[in-house]
Image 1 (cartoon, one colour):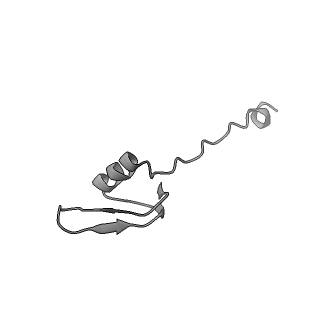
Image 2 (tube, one colour; image 1 turned 60 degrees about the vertical axis):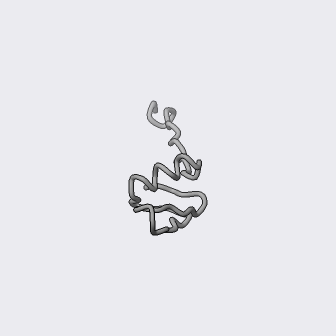
Image 3 (tube, helix red, strand yellow; image 1 turned 135 degrees about the vertical axis):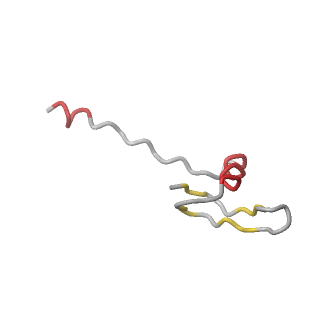
Amino acid sequence: MITIRKAFNWSPNGYDIETVPAGAHETLPERAVAIAEELGLIEEEPKKKSNKKARDK
């Protein structure tokens, strides 16, 4: 799952312009993801904290 912080425009073919809305997306074209990364628009998923104390009991 990819989470976009802010909507952005991109062109899949150099002619047409598509808007990728902010929010969670199951899939996006590879180039759209690369653009979002370059723009710093991909929200990092929080790392799950290890529940070591619960496991050690």
